[in-house]
Length: 320
Image 1: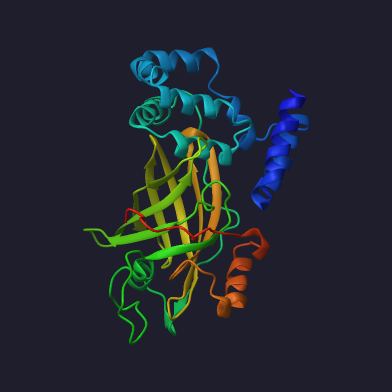
Image 2 (image 1 turned 45 degrees about the vertical axis):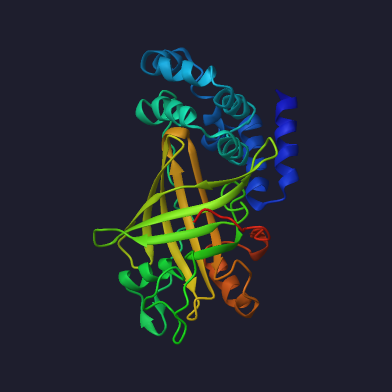
């Protein structure tokens, strides 16, 4: 078991991110001091009641997955992720996602919660969103238009500039190593049919564990929260529902950047997380706004060095 801990710590340390450094301490605390839910939940679901739940409710889905080469490879990959390592887990998911894998997870985790997990969304820190924009108090409508960004003409567009892009924003840097580091993260926002409803579709490139470059797409339902500049997100990602709470921390008046901070949980998968993304017009860091971006990061309890640049060097052909 000590060898497993050492291997996990070495893997986390090699990633050189603040989230992974924190997780090292959580792993060590869980192993040698006291149970830590964020780490200990990885061992839940192997007891007899959990296994009986899986067989009773999802027997055919299990057979379908383990007899499919790609789905079985995904399960084997996840089995190798120690101590609820979200970077390892999500890399397995984006590498091997298939309809059979989705149905497997949907049945065991989402529909029947056979592992008995209930992760909570982290709410500390809970930074306030920006309160004004272009000299006016931020409204729900203005905040929604900031999400639309460069994708559609509207009041958010800079004066005299009505040239749109195929995307709302292109992520230049991110904080969470599991979800924010993918190359070519295109953010696509659109208005929903009801008031205060939107759709968010991130399109990103994944480098799979078997050496391929593939495009992945998700589809989130977005609705207003109470305070302008805050939003609730929900997505079914490979069979598991994630719920998130987003804040618009700051946006430049000329739309050169927006900084978004989020916290979320995939409750039945036992995963809690938070992160931040710097979204810009073309995926490059707007140097003229560096001090302003740093100030917004500090309000979210994030040091600038905790962000990692996103590789946007080969984004041609994105299925937008």
